[in-house]
Amino acid sequence: MKLVIEEPQSRALEGHLADRPTVLVTSRLAVVEVARATKLANPDEQVQEEVDALLSSCTLVAVTAPLLRSARRLASRSVRTLDAIHLASALRAEPDELIAYDRRLLAAASELGLATAAPEDAESAPEDAGSAPEDAGSAE
Image 1: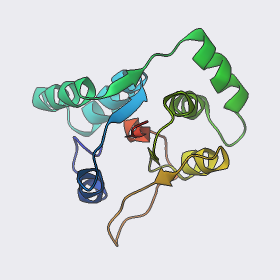
Image 2: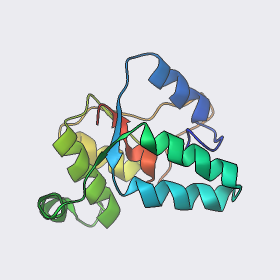
Image 3: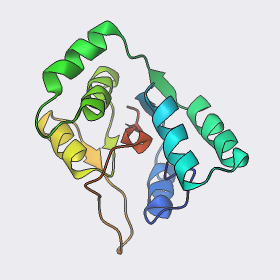
């Protein structure tokens, strides 16, 4: 979402991605998650076109029965359902790093041995709110 809707960490994220060759990969869940989140933030049709362009530039990990079985094993009190699916997707993609702005998702990813990042400027910090498609990481 931060790549479509201007948020406190948007510029830091753009700079982080620009600093390295990047392939964005995310769970196919992002097709719904990003569209919903951006529509709530700004219902303008042009924003949805930007979402479509962003998602078409990403590699989308299919939510298959085996992936859901993996996610099921990851789900816990601290790893919510959608986060478990994103983590399972990341593990399947073997990313260089998982980029997210949700503390619980970042902690779970670190515990699983994934490198993580939450690019921010001096005034921003990772949220403890729901995870969105920026749960996607470079080469994830």
